[in-house]
Length: 264
Image 1 (cartoon, rainbow, N blue to C red):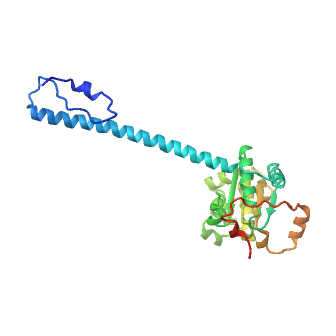
Image 2 (image 1 turned 120 degrees about the vertical axis):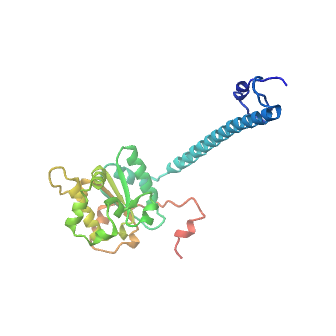
Image 3 (image 1 turned 180 degrees about the vertical axis):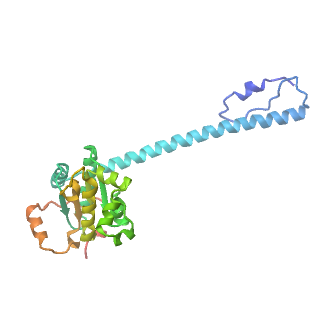
């Protein structure tokens, strides 16, 4: 039986079928049957290992391409076509003004919110989107007001002074101080006492050697929600007078879900 160098065979790149049986050096003392069995096992193990590496690499490349494709799809979806009135609202938010915008279900509040977050992100603003509950926060890729403030349900029993002390915890204070824009969704679900506590704690955490009297410590606040869920308090009429009412209706493009927001 002709002698074939084992190292030379092992270094071959097997991309197709399994390699042929090979023998080791001629000066070995193994029997022919034992030699063929051992070399065949070693060769096949090397071939299987090379094949497995190749398959894993192909899977990794495929996953990366698929992930890139999904990212591209998500990016395309963020390029929202806004009407002129919506664009004017985005520009107002980008100017740094505190803004409250409202409307009934399906009028485009979430569309404006997402576009505003994207616009502020391009301006290198640190934006935090919050909502009163975790479920509501998930709808806008945000967190609950409790998580943002570093509170737990037990904190509702604490005094205002104790809450202020908790705002000076390192990770909480860093988050509150780094916030440029705070967007609060579903404002109709936020209790006034809860909002007042947020205001007091943010003022305390954001003061730099001197007490600040600016609401929420000077953070730009953007608030949104459904006006049909807001109580008809008297100050609301003054807010409407000072603002603008959008007249253009932007309908949903997806007819499959339009029924869900239409009344009887």
